[in-house]
Length: 251
Image 1 (spheres, one colour):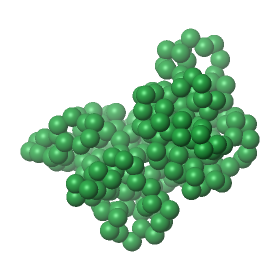
Image 2: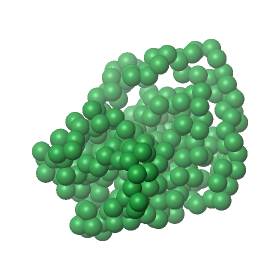
Image 3: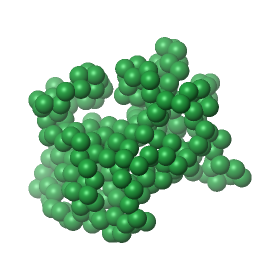
């Protein structure tokens, strides 16, 4: 990973040891050498989606973020070998993501099959806690995309969006049997996504606009736990239900 010029590895402890901000914070246009919109994929895993998006949209810059370097190495290597100049990767904890970007530096965020964190609302990448983090660096009205196999994650996100008055651009429980018209996006299927589809599972998708807020409302709804074992995730209970509790009015 250290040999790739487009990969940056900064853990929480590494940033603490520095006496100055991350060198590219607010300056990613210098790295990419253009003023194109910058799009993040958080929890990018092997980087398949980041690389595919970069190939489809050369007029945008893409940055994949994940903490697991062994998986991210695949996407970093592929993009390097293909000579893609609109791709970068950051290996870090997503909880400290505002440390890497300046105000209004990001135009979109992709959340592709994140862990639904059914027992820990504050760890969900679509929780109000993370909305508060994202709005520190996403442009007002920037787009948040969620693709998930998890009905729990999709339902929670939909309720969070409603509770906080975000504008929904598209929402569907079965993306590949819907009226979603962006064939470019539909053409991208990661290895694990194809396996879920082969198992007969539906892919859920929602995209909404992130408008700045001073306070947030964490939804309190009964959501049935996912009933199946997803790839690289722990067993999910089929019978248990839980009210999602997260501290409201997070700053």
